[in-house]
Image 1 (cartoon, one colour):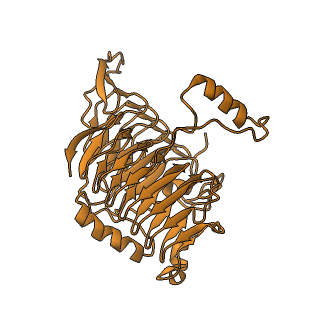
Image 2 (tube, rainbow over the protein chains, first blue to last red; image 1 turned 45 degrees about the horizontal axis):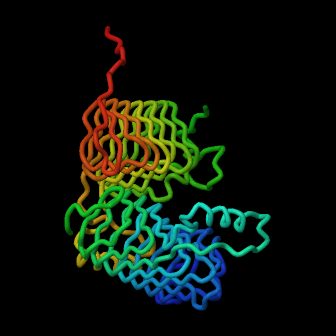
Image 3 (cartoon, rainbow over the protein chains, first blue to last red; image 1 turned 90 degrees about the horizontal axis):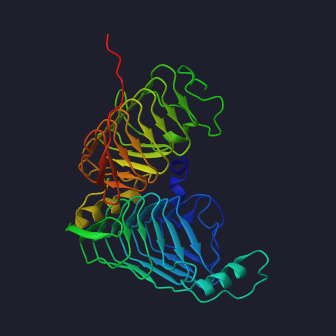
Length: 195
Length: 203
């Protein structure tokens, strides 16, 4: 209902975040609206711009958890609800992308595979770590093309490319790239049809 | 356990300044933690939601019910934070236990064809509430008596889960589940049958 009162300001106006002051390195296209008090709670990117969102997007309850060097680009007419975007390097989302409630997209596993390196990482991440450098982690950018539909409770992992029009069923865990207009389901996600 | 006051349509303990919509029927003694659960509720039917005697609805449960959606929750159901996406009908029968972050959806909301979906997505930013308006076909969901749904699981449109069955955590149920069956996995598969050891009272 609050949005209704603010309607006149929003229509054709600049993009805005309704619940706080937008970080300086975020660019929102015209008529794009972000909602949710925690949208930038874990937004640490120093890039400029770090987050670019196109026009006419609606994002209700989205979380932008961006690391120091992260950069996220999102197209026009996207519709997200409560999506969690975890980015260390690069996420690229096209136009007309729909993301359902509680979906997670992450371009990294955030910790190394090697047991020895993971001990170093635990030490560096500790509050006693005193800015000790973290060991390198695997990061692979994610590309989500136009018209992709991502259902609720979906997880998209690093290095995945979702082809245009792909349909990711609710709860799917996507570890490999998906061809255009394929319907995928399961953990790990498998192609089960086409749209 | 406290009782919602059917006349006042507000909850004395509520942290959220909301009301229980007029077309929500509370039968007998029910417990609602917060009216925040109705943030996305917009059913226009005479009775858009019915909660049975002894039903409990905790924080995190969201009734995302479209204008023609009808949700019915049976007696002594426990909704522990379930996201109900309903454009047609979601029926939850007596004694059902539903864990946190479960998704029950009778509709995909958006049209499945990407070209048609584009037109819908172009309309959303012109609407004051900026909502998707469920033009996709909906297929009712039925969670039968005494079903237990594990956390983070999803039930897709058109699915019926038979009486007494259990769905393991993080499962995605894409087809009907027979009665008294344990299913798990993504997609969910039958693990084993369950013995029905309930002794029903006969008169």
